[in-house]
Length: 360
Image (cartoon, rainbow, N blue to C red; front, side, top):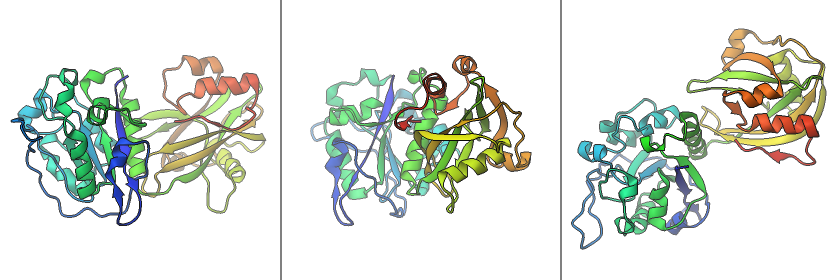
């Protein structure tokens, strides 16, 4: 699977930055620096002795939130003089859908995204039909250049869009990944690409994670109760639950959420079986750190205590029971993504001996 790579810079203190952290494992981002006045970077000149210049200019300024680094200009981008200019490339749509930009920008508006504290660059200069046409020498000097602008411009994050952008520059794989936005990466669906862009948006927001509690609700027939969410960019099914209020314990939040979303008050609250960390940019939060509990109850017809309008304000539109076979046969999007197999394991084998981090 072709997926991009992102790296954070090390935060060593208010006056010390380590740009070499770009080429070593996972490090912390820095937050809270306001962007300075936007500046336009001209098409850049590569290493000494080369006649090659980039057909697409850098879009950089001091103090940006994220700089996205592509692999190299494709033919469409080179002709347009703009990053990710192929109309079939999902980059600009993903940027807006994940919350990085306040509106959908066109490639020719690339310098305007500096006002959103977003920057753009490429790891290699040479224009090619595809990234597979690049050679190792095309990335000569890339690591030094990226480290230099990390030191001088101090972006909070650098996101490498395409695995070869990072591997070409530094000769190794990074730990965190974004999906490639290229049409050549059709094997990765939109929902998966968006999930990774949303994670970077949440991580780079500087906001705290909200505490959350959810419940895997199981009836005597081993059916699982799920809630359908219709979000602005996608639809998914998840376990009922939500954020924990400041005065609540996770268990108290479960009692409240099950009544509000499903009308369920008579149940047996079991142990916390799963944990899950979800990064996404919300107005006040960078996502949610969840504890998911096992709940057993008699079969019942969901009748939420909250009004449809109140639930819709939180993107909740439906509740229904699923058999394990229905879950495994469904093509719907679930949260966590491995929910069908995770639910079967709990139903057939009981709660795990220790909490399991179920990922996204």
